[in-house]
Every structure is written in C-alpha cells, then in structure tokens.
Amino acid sequence: MLDDDWREDCAPRRVMEIFATKWTSMILHTLQARHRGAARSGILHRSLPGLSKKMFVQTLRDMETSGLIDRTVDSTVPPAVTYALTPLGLRFVDLVDMVYDWGRDNADALDALQPRDGARRGRTAAVPKA
Image 1 (tube, rainbow, N blue to C red):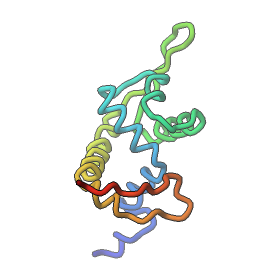
Image 2 (image 1 turned 60 degrees about the vertical axis):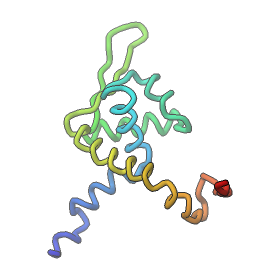
Image 3 (image 1 turned 180 degrees about the vertical axis):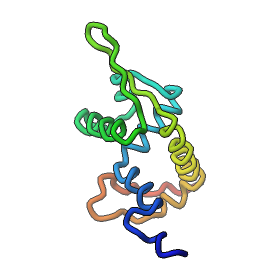
C-alpha cells in the first residue's frame, strides 16, 4: 500500500466519516428501500423508530450539506418538505445495502458479539434452538 492510503483525508476514512452518524446510513436505506428515493419529512421520520426529532433534523442538514440528499419545500400551507436522494446519495445507498445484506446474512455473528460498555442496546439472552 502507498503511504497516501493512510492519510487523514484518504478515501476510506472519508467514507467512514459519512457513516460515523448511524442515522445517515439508516436514512439513506429507508429513503431508497421504503420510499423509492424520496419522502416527505414526517413520513420519513415515522419510518425511523428511535430517532429523535433533533437528531433527525441535524442528520438531514448534514446529509444535505454533504450532497447526499436534496430538500424541496412546496409552497403549500403548511409547507411540505420533501427529501430525495441525489445521484451521489444513490451511489452510497449501494454500499449501505451491501452492509445491511451482510448483517441479515450474518445475524448469528452479530448475536455472538459481546456488548460494549455504554452500549444502548442491552444484550438479550440467546434462545436455544429446539
């Protein structure tokens, strides 16, 4: 590997930076998988249980700034806000889908992971197969 592959601004690190906020990948996936690439704000938010309104708005703003989604405001009363994947966002959805598919295919490996200190999700006891 070249030394450039280990720079602070190398491509792999920039990819991981995008996904450092867990909701980014979930919003990308939900927009594509459940809403065909675009959804109104309220519908999208209801599709993501556990996501606070504050984190929802913050993540959408970051994603819009990054160029992953577009925000459109319709001039209705009240205004309707729609979020849609950009061509760049669609390219990242492919990566997210690969990770989600891997997770579904390897759920047993995920179940075997030991819980991390401070993790929100508690470890549930595995139910033995009959």
